[in-house]
Length: 225
Length: 391
Image 1 (tube, rainbow over the protein chains, first blue to last red):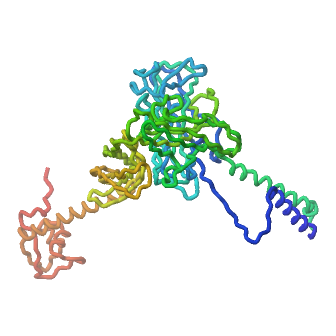
Image 2 (image 1 turned 135 degrees about the vertical axis):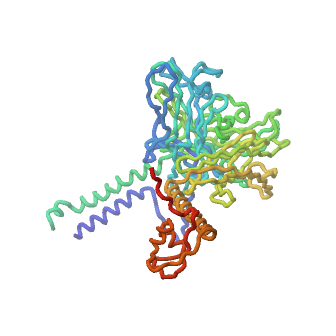
Image 3 (image 1 turned 90 degrees about the vertical axis):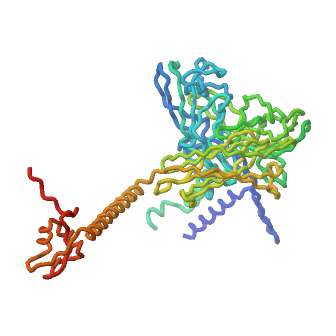
């Protein structure tokens, strides 16, 4: 038993040395300990349920078959395995916004690999079924519905109070080039972490659209306002 | 010692504890180091707390001001961060947003010149990027907004579906002195019931030349003005923009007719995006709007039961009053004879015996006394039973 106790004590000393490598403690009559916590930065990204960032997140709308008629596909932006996170570690003390827009600006389109086929995301003509007077010759319109989503506070002591979700909005070139996902008032928690899931997606696909897999790049921005 | 203890030497126990500690510590280390990239103003003004989060500048036409942004890499890896200036744009609902890098700037984005547009940061490190803002000679007086944007440099690749990029931005609010107007107009109030919530959406328009930090208070009350619930928050309303918000309220349990209203308040004084001790608060109130809320199913059942009970009570009350009126007018006296009982008298006068007992306040066991005087219906009484028709 004495040998066992000696072994345990020795092991604990070994652990203490390992953890304390690089740390030296000097005996002193008056020792003051200080700890500075610096303000972090406002950030947004996609993380899984364990809060691990997801590399290269993508969201697919429901697949659909070829049709000569205009049709609509739906999907969801933000799920439990791909949560849209916003961290505000005291960086934005008078509110912030979370918005989404096409990375390439208002002239962006859905493209297949090689960009030989396209359809639009922001043409409002006949609700996206026909090409209007915008700069491209493609029809199609993408609608986001943040109001259908769920905002969850993910930190001790913080709440979703004074953070409003955006209204269901369709992209429309020159009129609505950015859609609001969240708008945090100055009275919202200055330090908090939240995630948004279940934002409704709806894309109008014009009739006769070529069979292929399409992609569009969108950018989510969080702005201290 | 048992057989199990003999197979474990003390050194095995110690080493086991040691390695268990090391393995258990790894997730904590990973969580402590997870993060992202971002930025913050490098030189906040100690007299204005807003400048810890955003850039607030007052620049005369033709003048230049300098500042810097601290670019932060909170991740455990080296990151290349692109830094650029853009104009601001209004997002849906009037919220503040920043133009994309692909959009050519025409305002503050164009006035801003950065020393660097790309920064390579080691793990958990920061770097200061300096910039200047020059207000052109033909700049319009009032507030103009832009952004300093920070974004990790990544190659785009085809992925299928919606591919997402992320960036962080800091508002750059520039005031060009001149004739400054502060004006806010209330627009419409939309009300919608959605599942178990009532969504109230007020909207306002900023017709002035500067943004206004506006306190919006939205309230629900009964139709006689008794307050039920209110929410109040402060948001920036950008110049020339219509801003709309969605406030969620719990659905009133009982349902029915309610009133919604909102109030907007802002500081009319000359201060620009700063904490000001000489605040002149202006408040504008909307007129209440009535709306109907369907009751919760349980509430509906209770309400129907109450209505049913009230209706029954009213019918009984009306019948009772009618009976009393008729007794006063048409009923006559009858002297009880030796062989009479309540049922025989009732049958003789073609009336229900229970009604006869009730009209004469006779209670169970309905015993009558000889020579007792009762009131019985006259010939034309409405309470007389009609004989069955002979076919």
